[in-house]
Length: 339
Image 1 (cartoon, rainbow, N blue to C red):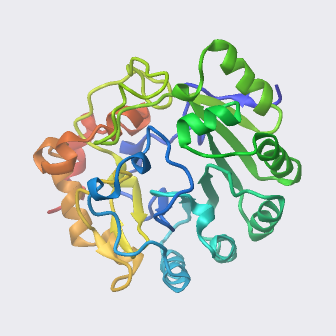
Image 2 (tube, rainbow, N blue to C red; image 1 turned 45 degrees about the horizontal axis):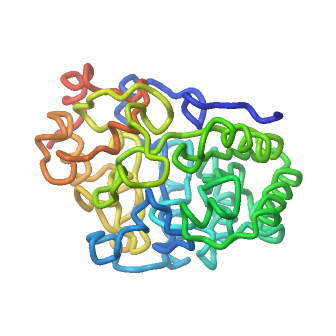
């Protein structure tokens, strides 16, 4: 197998101890949520939940290209470079009709070290691969759902020409140049150890890094106990021991821009609050603004203090990296975040 198996590690590589870097004048990561739609209904994802039961997600399904370009122009005013601009959110980024232009404009403005798309890759044709690579994409993360067409139907309710799909992924790998391809699968999409070996055999020579990640209970409304191949969930998504987390680190290094331009502080689809609106404010104003600062200051008292979604959230518990743990640094950091 050519790919490096990075199971049990941070997919993006070595992480900076967050408490030593705070406060940040430039976010480490900006997640762009370009479209609230998906071609799959994976059993562990919110797209398996009826829309009426998901709560508020966005006032728009698709982000306007003009709004996105305004956000990029705003981000160019940050004092430093963003580590990663990530296209994902709640949906399939390749469904956005302007995704190539979004990547191109981001690369042209040189606002980030890494431009990344997280995708199920069902729409990744050779033509799309060529266009994205020319535009400046330098990291592709592919979330896989099985080693056969039958498994894709079971996990995602998707009819997939599996051989063609693998061929399209191989095309990307063979034409990617310096871009990085990371392929992952969740353990519930694999039947057994033999199927896991099959996963490595099929995909291990057509990507740079590869891993089996763990299905974790992060979405309210999804019955994780009844999904195919349900396992005891005592590890994080990335294979690290689960620990109780008092302070969510996400709002201190990350922001997400939704299709309607609203900014939220974390990866949760049950938003703890809206930090600002890119239609009315600049991205830099929102990042440094009083609403976001007050939210961070309160978070340093503990997620339970915030109540609502933060009090019951499992996301950080099951996605925490040790370098991001802020528990011991809370008192020192409070002086930097005034409510």
